[in-house]
Image 1 (cartoon, helix red, strand yellow):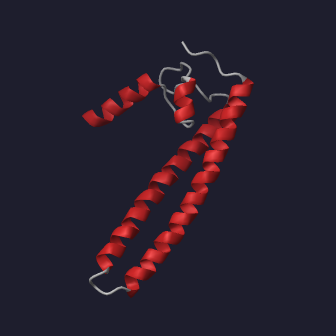
Image 2 (cartoon, rainbow, N blue to C red):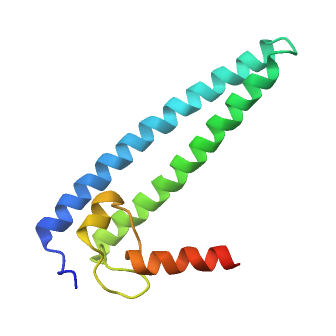
Length: 124
């Protein structure tokens, strides 16, 4: 069983989450600029090149959506830090292993419960 989070642990992961949030915000702003530029190029392109520009725009939108979803997860993790629930699995209430939180600091579930969640999604 994984040990309880100490205040030092929580502070460390809060710093990681804030850094990740800052990084993602920069990525989103960059993707927004790239998307706007690709839209301008698509409007100005000949009909032969417009397909490539549309693909670039769609790809940028997909990346922005992924990053925005991650931002929401990071913000939710920061709420759990403030509420004193950070590091506990939302399904089984056991402590999430530090190795998992190191890889995915915004994880809501321990690895076993996450596997269950993903299996349920695949079955649906």
